Amino acid sequence: MDNFNQFGYNQPSAVLTQEISKVMRGVYMRMCLALIVTGLVSFFVAAEGSLVQLMATSRLFFWGLIIAEFGVVIAISGALHKMSSAMASLLFYLYAVLNGVVFSTLFYAFDLTSLAQTFLITAGVFGAMTAYGYFTKNDLSRFGSLMVMALFGLIICTIVNIFIASSTMDWIISFAGVAIFIGLTAWDTQKIKTMLAYDGGVNTSKIATIGALSLYLDFINLFLYLLRFFGSSRE
Image 1 (cartoon, rainbow, N blue to C red):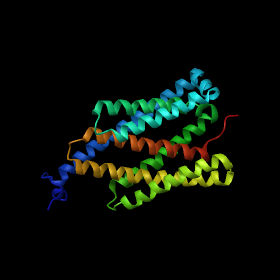
Image 2: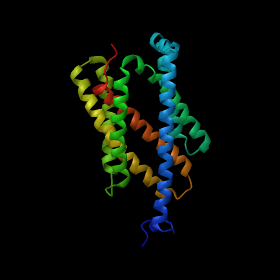
Image 3: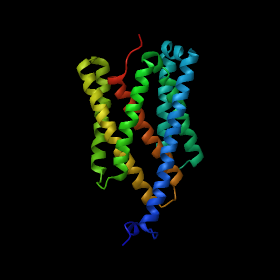
Image 4: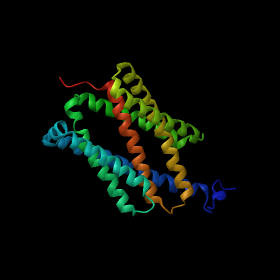
């Protein structure tokens, strides 16, 4: 019996697998394009300098950007089924642009070589874990739930450490952040693949956008936590 016939699909599983593979390539292309947008915006904003100076001097402007980023993510995640695919894609790349503005400060805080090295390390780790999530036969749903709970714990610990400023807790948070986003990368990849299998082509474009956003967030957060270990401050 076809593996997916129980979910109402009549095509052979090999055909369905090919369709999923094709859409997943689109997911990775969207994610990579968003990373390129973020990188280019970061570079040009850092080179121009005025927005970086404004973020450094105006907490209102900086936190306005952060709130706008959260708003875009919430809009995509919460209202995806109500908006068009074009609008979802537009909001996704808007988020990549806003991230680029915020991340422009990294060019002032870290040496360029260490930024490049950390990016390559992140790409290698991310590639290995997303490949595992895609090809593994193991069900990662329970593991993913644990990672989500751990992420909430990480956020709480990060907020607490803002007030107590413990260097020891900061290292623990950094290690935990790397581990959590490594795990989330594998789980999110499998989750996207599963969503596509159940969807049957009805909301493929929207799933590709939310999937690209999920993997983009995993990559960005993994990069930021690895930067705590491999980043070298500018002299």
